[in-house]
Image (cartoon, rainbow, N blue to C red; front, side, top):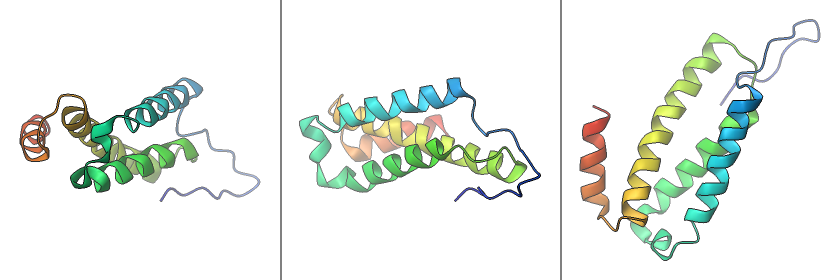
Length: 109
């Protein structure tokens, strides 16, 4: 997903700082705790859970800081925020997937 290969003579800075990586690691720990909640096993949200897990893993790769990678990271972060909001509403607040999606979509449109 990210461009990770660079020539040995070219040293690009990392896409994420150590502080940002720590934040993503914290989100991953929180995500793993959330997955232990009984409502996390609802069939309707399994694709959302899978996608959020992949987005968190991709962010932890910490590719070189290029314009293309920055743009990809921005798209992933927007999708990640949307999925986090929906999953929290469904799993912790007990909302239906449909209601949570409608509410959250209004925030991001």
